[in-house]
Each structure stands twice: as structure tokens, then as C-alpha cells.
Figure 1 (tube, rainbow, N blue to C red):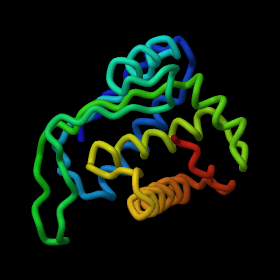
Figure 2: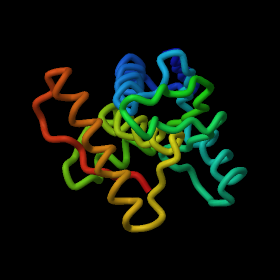
Figure 3: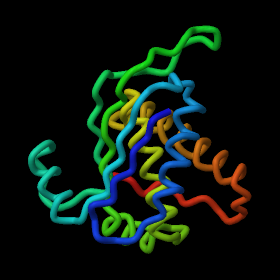
Figure 4: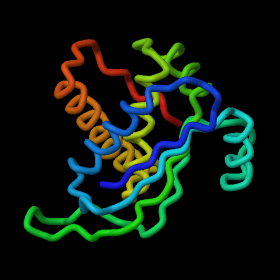
Length: 165
């Protein structure tokens, strides 16, 4: 799996954790091991520009996903996953920090960035949360991936509740 993490935000973030959880999420979703993903960490001004340009919404947001080859997880366990470019995930640590502090189960900016990375990966794979059934599926899968990764890493604290918009 080729995953690049590029921090352009000026904020210190745990880039290794972002890389690790993205790799874990893609493996768990059975994405081809030669697929490529880019994660870009930006400041609030850059995220606001992207949010306005692509969503026509004001202010910065927490995460945005820009799919390339529209890869999807294989439908059956014995299907060969396709290889390709997943696309880009853009994260904003300033928004993540605020969301982590305001969450029901308060957590760190880095924990929120981990959650947002998985959220972005799922969006790249075609998951959405516009409808209640889609939201239940996506957020359930997101929690299972984050919990699985944290259990594997020996994280014993409570998982952050989803705070993504």
C-alpha cells in the first residue's frame, strides 16, 4: 500500500498514526495492496478554501475526500480487489482539535485525526452518511475499524464518538 502523508498545516500531528490507521483501514476493507492514497494535512484557511470551492459551504471543515479511481471493496471474500489510485484525504487539525474537545467523550486532536482518516477512507470507498441507513452502516464500520486498530495497538481508553459532520 502506498500512502503519503503530507503535513502542510504548520501544526504538529502524529503522521505515523495517520499512516498506520489508513493502512489498517484499507487492509480491513480488502483494498489491493498496490493501491495508492494521499493524505494532506492543511490549516483552517486552506480547508475553508477547499470547502467553499468543492462544497459551496462556508468555513473550514474537518475532512474532505477526493476519490480518483472510485475503488470499492470486493463484494465477496474470494474476489480479487482492483488496484488503483484511491485519491486524496484532506484533514484539518484545527477543526479536529475543537471537535475532540467538544465531543461527548473528550479526546485529543490526534485521536480525532485518526477517526477522520478512517472517515475519509470510507468516503473514498463510496460510503456516505446522507441517509439514516447509510449513516448507520458507515459510522458502524468506522467505529469497528478505529476500535480494531486501537485494540491492535494496545490503546485501552474509550474510543472517541463520531464527531464528523
